[in-house]
Image (cartoon, rainbow, N blue to C red; front, side, top):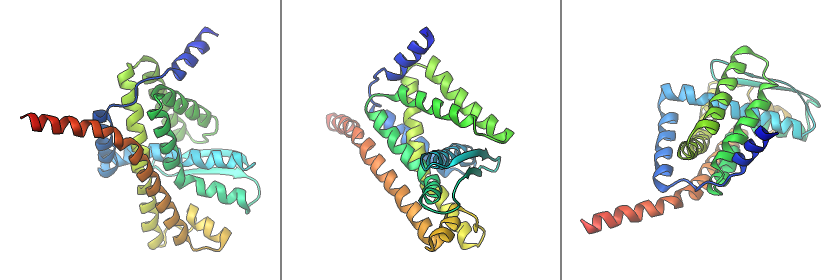
Amino acid sequence: MDLLAEVWRRATAAQPPPTPELVLGAALLALLLVAHPGLWRVSRVLVTITHEGGHAVAAVLAGRRLQGIRVHSDTSGLTVSRGRPSGPGMVAMLLAGYLGPAVVGLGAVGLLLAGHALGLLWLVTLLLAAMLLQIRNLYGFVVVLVVAAGVLALSWFGSAALQTALATLLTWLLLVAAPKPVLELARQHRAGRAPHSDAGQLARLTGLPAGVWIALFGLLSLLGLAVGAALLVPALVDLTRSLASVFTAS
């Protein structure tokens, strides 16, 4: 009970929002992680986990029976659920994947600016732990376990500054990375290599072309990035004023 009380105390403790310098540095690092091909292969695993987690949460909320999640070494993933093969529940589940990173990123912005960076990390750890119970392949289990253990360790042993930095980076990474898998899907669709993608399945369920769904994924992902950035970037005003005062004084 003492341990649970300590976890709850830490998870609900308020911390100062990230400084303008931290917001800028995390944004630049997130851009690098997404833009660099080698780094993207690593950071995309986080996006895949969020993508499949979005499918899983939507399936459960829609009343479907979750049967398992797989995360593969090529950074692809698969979430399987049981229920009606058509209808609003199936559509919601298919929609939630590509929209997952942007939605989670926006939620993270809210927690971050409210001074709950540590609470954000604990929530991420809890969601990853729940996801572990549904992973059905060894690679996926190891990857999710490693990510969860890393976030947990930093949440427990890291300094407040390190915790806020990690939470800020994760937030930016989800927001910045959200549109890129949609672009990859669009290229695959044009090449005729994505008939069983989320967009392809939505096309068969609704009668709307897969291209329409891909465009919707992209538009909403970019909107999430724009809204998240608009909420985070005002923190940079103080940095701009500080730099201006330095140049003025010199």
